[in-house]
Image 1 (cartoon, one colour):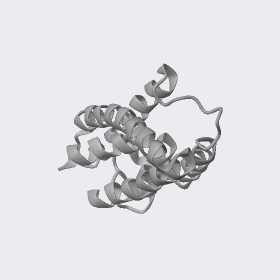
Image 2 (image 1 turned 30 degrees about the vertical axis):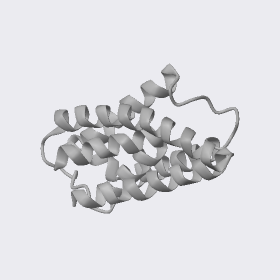
Image 3 (image 1 turned 45 degrees about the horizontal axis):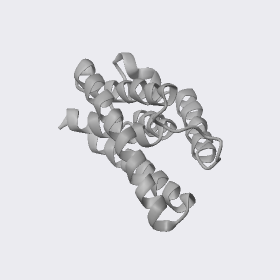
Image 4 (image 1 turned 180 degrees about the vertical axis):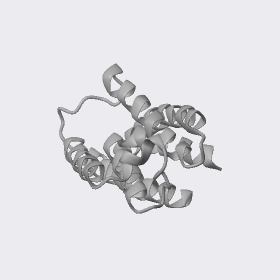
Length: 153
């Protein structure tokens, strides 16, 4: 079950990098992710929560800009895989399974990046414009991410 949750936080990372970091930090701070005595304990500090929350909000705004590059170009894709691996590792750390969580998170990020791009393209075509599709993707990432970290508890 833990690896499935790590995979799923990776999928969220494929949708929104900042959101995955923010919900992971909030989960640690709220005690949903018991990382207090692990390498990932810093994620529960208010500074990490603040930084990652701001990053998540900035990403939600920047995603609406027409100049924002595709998530599938190498720098964005690579960032999603690395952050997905990190968030998966944090979830894995709750049960001493950091490496397994890292791998699951990275795989999930690939799935989320490619699947999210395809889903958004289809939603954009259905709506005839991008903003509604982007807002749906935002909501899925935020709600899904919170449900994932809450499920770890």
